[in-house]
Length: 375
Image (cartoon, helix red, strand yellow):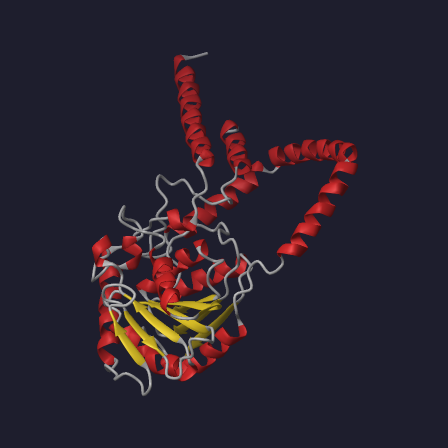
């Protein structure tokens, strides 16, 4: 064999070894929860969102407290705004609406946009201020940037809810989350990690913010998308919609023709009706699931020997098919990655090109390994 051929084969062996080692390391990484994802927006998009949020807030008037309602400043937290509806009865469990502001940086807009409707419908309302004392900026970027900082407290929103419940008779079956713009992005992953605590989430513009495709919610929390057809952020709402549909979340998709980046208050009657129709129902089938599991385990024990033989044959066939079809599968994966990389200014947040989702399986790595060996 000539020296040139020896050098050629050596380079191929080294390259193949390095690539396969990298791929196997990526496959071995643990799957991240939605809360662990810490993606970032490009400076261009940050500036666009901040300006759009400020303009939307500036267009909305500073409304007086509705007749009969009680307003509390700095409750339950510094900078937060709370409203008790007219006719509130401490003996009757009352729905609670928790609103998160956008990159306008304070809860004035979200509070004013919701206060009349919540008073008319008898809902407790709190518009939260992203906590400055914990490092959340008062301007862009707010909630979603705070989520990636060491000072982020993933229980902070829950603590504010609990503080309200200490003073008021909150209906635990009817606590809803809403987010405008940056607040909506924060809820796109935070609500998944707290899905057993809330009856539903309302995305008031925007939505998806870089979490993976794995279904992380313990309970498929229902969602209502209130979006404008002319909103630059609509594409992110569409991504969140596709993710939730794939994970079997119930949702309503309401795109208002001609509406831009803002809280679309004209649609609130429909949103309120949706909240009345969707109380928290996660965990109501606990007893049924227990019985089912017991029966399943009994059947499995009885048929253990038969199942083992069958699985053994099936595994052999799968390995053989994987070898045969490896080339076509790898080509398909390559096309998908190319589309993802050129998607938008929203960054996924994954480092080193290693996906944290279940779809990057070890089977795919093995298939690519076989393809490399055939080079």
